Image (cartoon, rainbow, N blue to C red; front, side, top):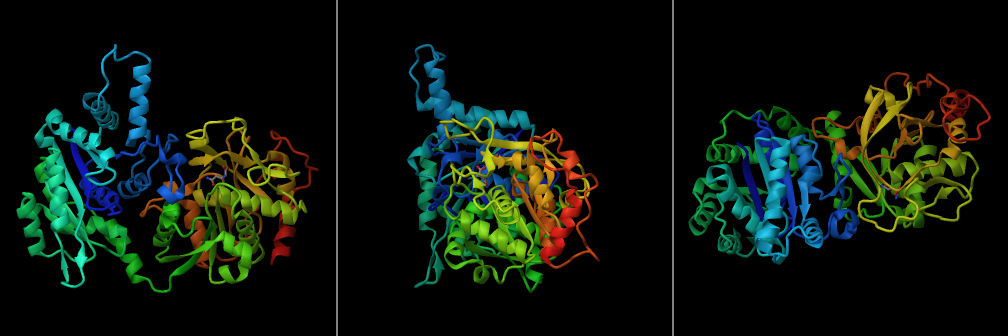
Amino acid sequence: MTRYIFVTGGVVSSLGKGIAAASIGRMLKSRGLSVSVLKLDPYLNVDPGTMSPYQHGEVFVTIDGSETDLDLGHYERFIDVELTSLSNVTAGQIYTEIIGKERSGIYLGGTIQIIPHVTDAIKGHIKALAEQSGADVILVEVGGTVGDIEGQPFIEAIRQMRGDVGRENTFYIHVTLLPFLGSTRELKTKPTQHSVQALRSMGIQPDAIIGRADHEVGHEVKDKIARFCDVKPENVFGLPTLDSVYKVPLYLEEQGVGVTICTALGLPETEPNLAEWRHIAEIEDETEDPLRIAVVGKYVELHDSYLSVAEALRHAGFHHGRKVNIDWVSSEQIEEQGPERLLAAAVGILVPGGFGPRGVEGMIAAARYARKNSIPYLGLCLGMQVMVIEYARNELGLENASSLELDPDTKDPVINLMEGQAGLVATGGTMRLGQYPCRLREGTRARAAYGKELVQERHRHRYEYNNDYRIRLEEAGLVASGTAPDDSLVEIAEVYGHPFMLGSQFHPEFASRPDKAHPLFREFIRVACGVLREGEQYELPAESPVSSSDSINGSGNGVDAREIGSVASIEER
Ligand code: GLN
């Protein structure tokens, strides 16, 4: 029998409801239960894929290629699951589905209404996830705040779920804000009372309340909430702002949230195994001397736009027992001031994904700076493309080399539009999306990092490395170390002879976990820590890059890249 936990939010948005839900997922998983998650987003966009980073933050890509809310990233990282398109449903999707059916006559002339058609469609998605995942527990988080007009059908749908699957199989948690009043030095409960009233007026009596606050939540406050909101005092929990999100599962567990949920849902009350999490949470507290990594991007003032990147850097830090501090560097500022001063303090430089020409020359300058100064560099998607452009310009002498995205008239499009992308009019869901296999070439850094030949990684892009330049670039020392298994696409490029300069066309950040750092991030941070293995050199590729590129178009002259590569590496020093 599937159990359902519904999480709603009160008073304000950005409360960390997603982190609270993800933490509950972790607490259940560490009791040996299988958990899946569904984020219901009441906005009318079909998905966040076409929303501006200013509006929405990062777009999280699932293995099956859907562009989803960034909360799915929290769920994947905390619960260590791989979610799919089944785990994010928006009002836009629900209405598209219903209107499509109406247009094809499926409703046989009936009047289409919020209840039952919209609510049934929402419940259909919840039940589909339960069925397909087979999970013991389905966590359902409703986006937005109770009282939002567009959220009402979603609140109604989760209300009906209790009747559909039984009281004993459902648990409602309301996460709400307890503001602190400086003048009286107290946490105020009135907004929570109002928010719970709003929820009750829609037929949902919460089983538990989690009060988010900037301070510890004392007994008197909890008792007051219990009295006014008709919730058992032992089911009211406080969650102060902690210095690390990875402490939230531990904090909630200590408060008894896990036991409360398991008792209410008749789940076995096994001891949770959170030892690994305790270890992770302590690392950042215990380490002094944080590593400074520069993240060079266009939206650096909006850290949520690079959420998974920032988390993946932290995870790699955990692996090496170090705390990573990110210097957020604006690529446009690099264009104005040059890279030297802005990047001087960084022991590693990361250029994440991005779209459009703004600020890209600054990223190219950052890549050049990293290469010339032997500073570890990790390029993700656009960050890989700028690394290729920089190499072509400065090592092949193709001064105007660019990407068709940045300069549609460039004579040397070292990054060109992918086949199938030309002429696309619709923008939503039309990129190369989701997980694709990548074969790693023996003897490369990429191969050494992963320790295996074939990997699967997630993509989200329209442009790609242009194979017409592959042989020339390889001869000049930019090795294609990861390709599609049929060799048709270059997925990873790395600079021969550099301590660590690697770019991936995919987004490794989505697959990183706090207790399982992604291999590319792990290696990048290792080299940034200065932990070079004794005499660490670039190992020679086992096969000649030229002979391995028979299947691609190119105009190579047959020079062995191993020789050229070693010359280039000497030059760099
Ligand atoms: N804008 C580039 C492309 O579409 C890179 C995309 C990305 O960084 N996610 O190929």
